[in-house]
Image 1 (tube, rainbow, N blue to C red):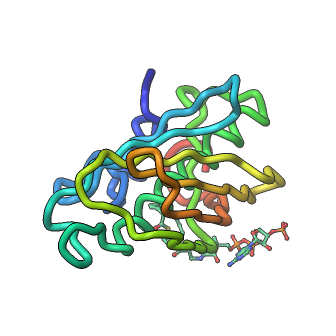
Image 2: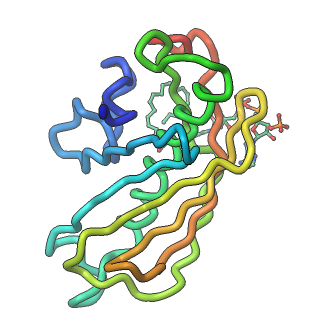
Length: 157
Ligand SMILES: CCCCC/C=C\C/C=C\C/C=C\C/C=C\CCCC(=O)SCCNC(=O)CCNC(=O)[C@H](O)C(C)(C)COP(=O)(O)OP(=O)(O)OC[C@H]1O[C@@H](n2cnc3c(N)ncnc32)[C@H](O)[C@@H]1OP(=O)(O)O
């Protein structure tokens, strides 16, 4: 299976969080399950992603939710419209990002984010995300993503 971000054309692939052309970026990769209608991202924080020793920096967690959500929006919109991302790349930007830090997130385990689209309407998609560390829910996110307007270069916009 191919990560959603790898369908972005090069002009949309410089994002610090998820762009495959950003050498210094996080290279977040998100996978879509068309049957469940949900997405999954896995990421293992590095020791320098520390908030206080032993715990992950919240800004990193917000970045994971952010790029996981933009990719989820692209997949959800493609599925809703019966489009293939291969033939019709879609790119969303973040209009609103809410992150609830429910518990400290331990630094060490692989993190798992699960995204569920709540609304797909016009250019707007709303995505809810749960982030788990070693099976424990530590972060919940809600994002509003807006498909970039036509004329912003690359794909179907
Ligand atoms: C970083 C570039 C941002 C600028 C975007 C421009 C061009 C993009 C070109 C290429 C992009 C390529 C790659 C992107 C790379 C990385 C993405 C990773 C994620 C990010 O790191 S990205 C950076 C942070 N991001 C921004 O820098 C956004 C700045 N902002 C805007 O560029 C506008 O603000 C925009 C486009 C968001 C909306 O503007 P707009 O005029 O196109 O759309 P409009 O207002 O019609 O809203 C349509 C529906 O979204 C609802 N809606 C709008 N805003 C809302 C809000 N805040 N809360 C709740 N709902 C909201 C409305 O209520 C309506 O919903 P409804 O139809 O139901 O009423």
